[in-house]
Length: 132
Image (cartoon, rainbow, N blue to C red; front, top):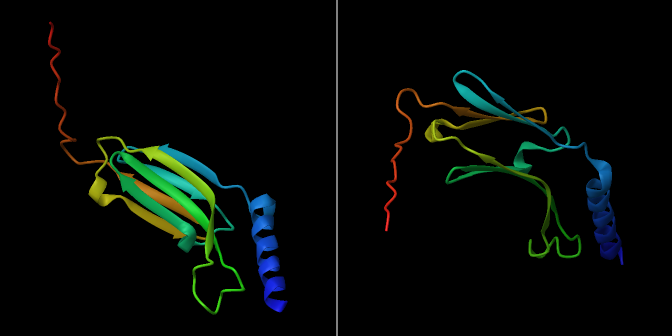
């Protein structure tokens, strides 16, 4: 019975967080002379909850809320569940140096820095149109 009560309390805590127990995430994108900066302000989210992936020309930034069932806590992590809190996909321009993208987290504030290429940008190829 005690384990069921612990599991119920964890579920209530998760639902409280989803239902308004967190501060809304704020996002801004700033273009500077030599870079683009994506700022994500999420004061109640820790750095380990953030995930950043670069797929093709898309930068995917998301956070998840991790939880687990107290009933199976000692056995394994099979009862672990995640709840998405924030998800955003950004287009990465071809003039961004993909190898130099950096992310910094400080006090609930994430900054993703996308520096521009120095010199040449990604190859551009014109596609000729054939007539039939």
